[in-house]
Length: 169
View 1 (cartoon, helix red, strand yellow):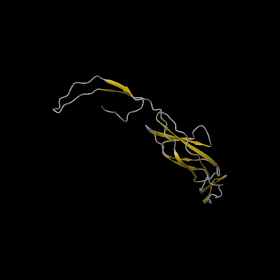
View 2: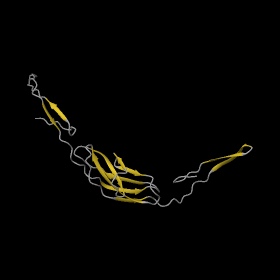
View 3: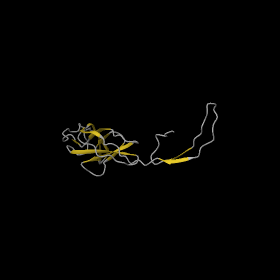
View 4: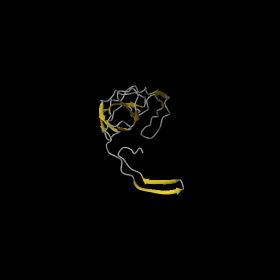
């Protein structure tokens, strides 16, 4: 007997067997036997220990403990605020939700899926808020120069300001 392991679900394989003796003599081939592995119908385990942390005024970082599966977990779907459609699909066990409103609060769950698209149940719910309002002003513009470029035009140039959120004008 022999067990051929590590195969892909729902795949067909054909086998033949040859016998040998101590002197190295080989028999002819047996008949050919063909079998298929059954489909993968087992969902991965739910991700655990989901945490959410507001890292700045527009980003919440998520992380969780990996799921397991009888074949292989290939990814995770991330859900925000009870939505039915994932906001992201990732292969890692972390995700940064960016572009959120300043001082906004959001709840998240994560589901694992395998190559056969079996989906786990949802992880625990984790809630976090982005950091409060943007109260830091941009840096002062520097290096202002003015140059008369024509009889009716003066060109202004300066070094751009920076900001912890965004300079918008």
